[in-house]
Length: 163
Image 1 (cartoon, rainbow, N blue to C red):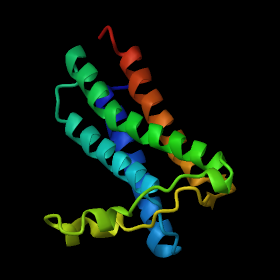
Image 2: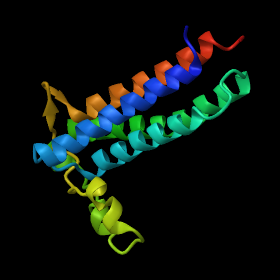
Image 3: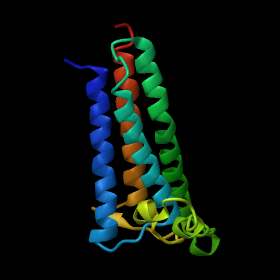
């Protein structure tokens, strides 16, 4: 039987898989993420954390499902927007691609607990460089993951709306 709590656990599992894959590609395969890639990673991690917290709400009530869907959707849209922006940037000719700015590890170097989260935000500033997995750019994978999460969240909400 489909419950919204099960859907949220599924969203959490997708986020764990996406985060594990991105960390494996960075540390196992030596692919350094760009600034926009790190924003997408943090957005997916935030989606996972919010989905996990939403599991604690009484999902049998419509207001709880609606609140959960809205809260989990916010970082999902942020990550999807960043992925779409990166795809646009990567489609531009090299001489027209703007810089992404300084890497996050440089921007947050003096912040509290920097050593704790620095491995997650370590990267470089070349957002126009296209990296592939199974012949598909990583930004597409990120966008597809965000769209999938939104479809699951709101599809489940729609199906269970009257219950």
